[in-house]
Amino acid sequence: MRDVVPQAEQQRIAGSPGVHTSLSVMEAVAADGPLTLADLAGRLHTPKSSLHRVCAVLVERDWLVRRPHGRFDLGIRAIGLTQRSLELPIVTAFRSVSANLLTLHDETVCLAVLDGEDSVFVALEETSQPVRLMTRVGSRTPAFASASGRVILADRSPAVVAAQYAGRTLVTPTGRRLRGVEELLEILSEVRERGFGENDQETAVGLYTASVPVRGASDAVVAAMTVCIPTSRLTGERRGRIIADLVAAGLRLSESVSWLPAWNATRAEVHRPGDRTRVR
Image 1 (cartoon, helix red, strand yellow):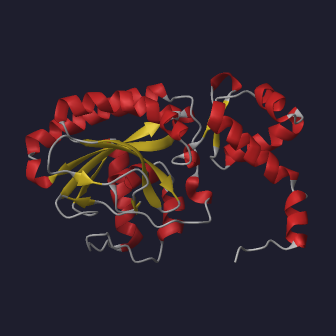
Image 2: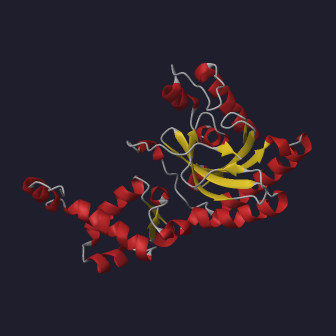
């Protein structure tokens, strides 16, 4: 039997114009964005003042991003909701930069953001090697354990990180137990000093990853770019070459998205389970 929404609930929903406006804005931007406030007002027949408030909330919650010249486009939380998610500014810039890394080293390159306490892949370019990281857009790893998550956490003050993780048991997906928040803060301090993060078999057995920050407006870290390499293909000399090229690529990507505001996905209240990484 089809569920029936109670009449009182129907009236409450119908009496929530902000909800309808928010959804209409998202639908318009997903279909035809990026759009200015004037574009949205004309399409939705809604006053600019009302749209301004709605768009401000959507930007603040990372469903929209405001491009240069005032146009609204899909934000990082819109990943996967529409085919246009592949056209997000940071994703298109990533694909251009990562192509060069693939040419140089033929190893999987990923773009990750922080969502709550997870590092989430939002784009990737896969190696042609038969032995490689098996993952997909939307895959998650604990931020404290992953190279990408550590790079993003390193941009936060030690006091903020300590408050978030203090008193908790920190065990990586492969079973390594950190010495509490003290060791995590030591790791993040080293990441800040070196300008990149590393992970050796802490998120998947046989997997090494190196990650660099992607910086947006005000030099804030908005994402992390990561190279994923099976340990069977890694030598000390090759590690050095890959890290050097990854750092350079991170700087190029940062230049391409230097206008992007830093989104803060820690505001999300719902955490969805996702795939964990593994090596084939």
